[in-house]
Amino acid sequence: MILNNDSDNPRITMNGRQKLFICLIDLGILAELCIGMAAATSVAPEAFTATFMKTFFAMFLPTLAIGIAGFRKLRDRTENA
Image (cartoon, rainbow, N blue to C red; front, side, top):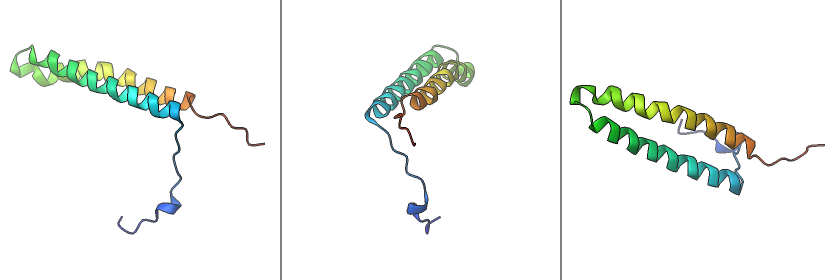
């Protein structure tokens, strides 16, 4: 682990549109986290974890899928001919 050569790993380059999109997705996930915590605090302590998991993951999984699809869609289109 310590002696890994970083030059062997492929570089991930992002354009400006991808960087902005990732920032927006991150903000969305933070908002979902806050909504999940707020929903979980409104129920009995015994149901806190279950309520949080149901609320958060119901919003997070679609956001994650949109993030992956959007990141791929915003790639630079270069032709290697």
